[in-house]
Image 1 (cartoon, rainbow, N blue to C red):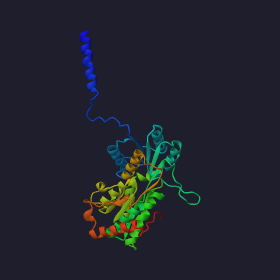
Image 2 (cartoon, helix red, strand yellow):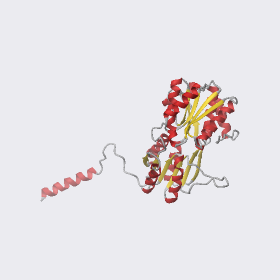
Image 3 (cartoon, helix red, strand yellow):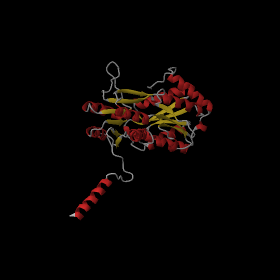
Image 4 (cartoon, rainbow, N blue to C red):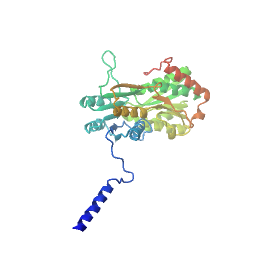
Length: 345
């Protein structure tokens, strides 16, 4: 009996000791105030080196700094996107985020079905009523929108100032109002500094597939380069990877979008018009956690640091100091309201 009691005592001590042992690499136990986040990616998915990757970086930052538990869904075609959002809402996520305008209708419907769940839509499309007034999203839905036209204005001015040609190019993904904002701002920037310049604008298609067709992007870009264009700004998701291929093949320049795309074609990417998708995603997760979340429209422009262009050690030698100074002046004038950048064609 004494031996049995001794053995039981040893086993009990070992069991208690094991409670304090955590295998190397294991995650810490979730804290009581941890927030559960669900994110469904847009067409093109992770690895687009652009829009979706920006959203991923914002969520990754929330994991590190806020202790968020994030679940990502990369959908396939059509209804998969709605199914992904619905699955996350049904699982009781604290906030569900759809990345891309294509989620607008689904997010609106689900926000009504799950009034206690917070939702956010990156590039959520605001509708209008019969009188043309904007229709606000549901009170539990945050519409994260960017003033893409403002950042595009600056890279348009840059393209005209350093391009060495009176012809500059633009390639969009899907032919829709959202991408028209990029074109409109770019065109306005070109014309502001070079009134007699011509902007050649083309689109890859009229369906969401236009955002993931590098072959079509390369085809359009090669045609523009051959017509005398020296610089092309793309706003086309992973279709833009084809634009970069064409830039390398033609020994001409391209301008990236959404994130810094220098690494896709070093020395052939003049700059990138960046959108703070990562910052917007992180911000809305933070708001959901600290209780400051409110439904409504959140705008991110030059004044808010939501858009801009890349100027760093990689491309500094490609942008003369005089041009950099001119762009800084234009930026200040836009923020001050002295330049009204159009958002429609």
